[in-house]
Image 1 (cartoon, rainbow, N blue to C red):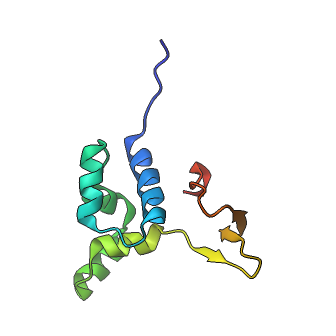
Image 2: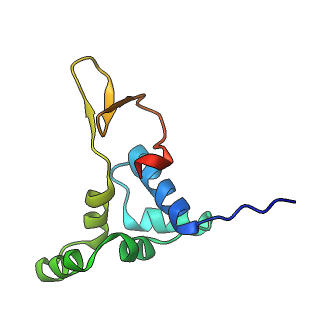
Length: 104
């Protein structure tokens, strides 16, 4: 039987981005509940890996939400142009298409 290595951080991050696209107003509590039910990393673990030291200092000084800062950093910018086609990082996509691994 062939065993496949699973990088749980990358898997959690990819699923987090897809869930964020489905519901852009997702809260930290909703993600933590979903992550717990599906054996994924919590928001705190994702924050610790995604945000760098300068961002942590900025968050501490301005008393910002770490979760909101993380969402702003990794949320892909999806723009609808005049032809009603959706773009992600310059490439046309279907609206309901999941984010590919290469876009992360």
